[in-house]
Length: 123
Image 1 (cartoon, one colour):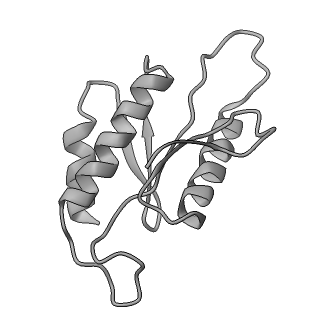
Image 2 (cartoon, helix red, strand yellow; image 1 turned 90 degrees about the vertical axis):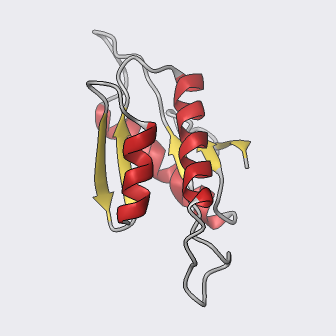
């Protein structure tokens, strides 16, 4: 987790950006003034950076090295917004579960409305 934390810190370094451990092996990033494409680009750099660590995984893991599943969820706040921060978190967690369930080591873009499944953007 410490090595993954270092990757996160190296990739996300702008003043005002936030990286925090969310739950067990989950991290949350808050990236102000970052659009969907920017969030995807950072997510892909994180995924690749974790894989590049080449940390051996546990014997029962599906991959020989530790990899990362990354989900992005973006929104533009507005005065009369229909979504709330909790909706953004729910959408990201849904996409993260889907990324893990479909083999991991991938980036998914969350569907904020959750009317459909997360969109697989790149493996």
